[in-house]
Image (tube, rainbow, N blue to C red; front, side, top):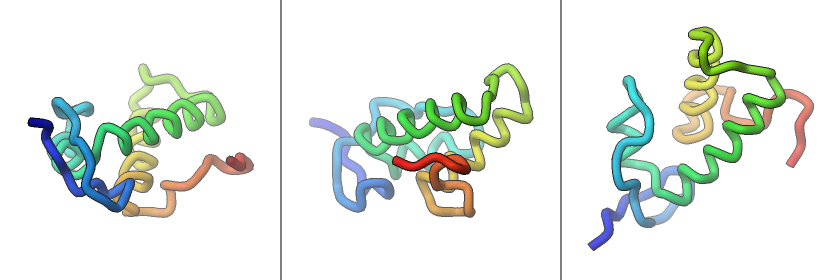
Amino acid sequence: MANMVNCVVLGREAEGLDKPPHPGSLRERIYQNVSKEGWGQWLVRLQMIINEAQLTTADPGSIEFIEKHMAGFLFGENDMGGNPFGFRM
């Protein structure tokens, strides 16, 4: 039986992730509250953020920036969950 979660991204119950997808402080929170589909939506947004802001995941400052966007997108915790500046979907 699939792991089901009340997905904060989709606003409904959906199939959960197979394992925590991200290290650090958000690890368990994402695993318990984000579905596979919701995580997929984040990955699309992440690619856009990396490309638009010309980030590199080898830079600790870029990781911090990405994690702020991640918390905003997934959990609505700050004003960084929206599209990168000047980008429209």
